Length: 124
Image (tube, rainbow, N blue to C red):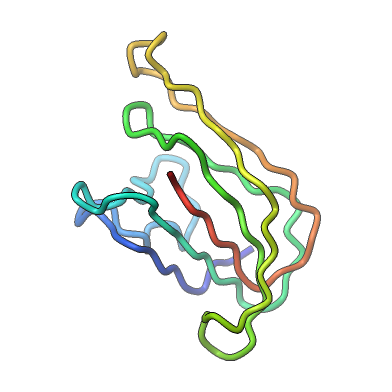
């Protein structure tokens, strides 16, 4: 599925959220700004209402969120806003990674199995 737009609460200059618009296994991905605070949010807009089977989230080996809340939504207008129909799918957690001395990345595959126009991730 193509991602047509990405909105975030903050981004590091060398890891902007726009990196997520195209899949790149060796890419830099997105990082929040070092002084962005928490929670951080990331909204991925799809080209239309699409069926999303699975969401893969790869955690950085050293910059690890405690949890990620996952929301699915449908837009009420052209822009994402407060009037949107949003469903909280739940959350995932990541290992603290201290046992590997912060050398291992962690991949979470989240079964979605639903249609939506955007996904919103909230990192805490």
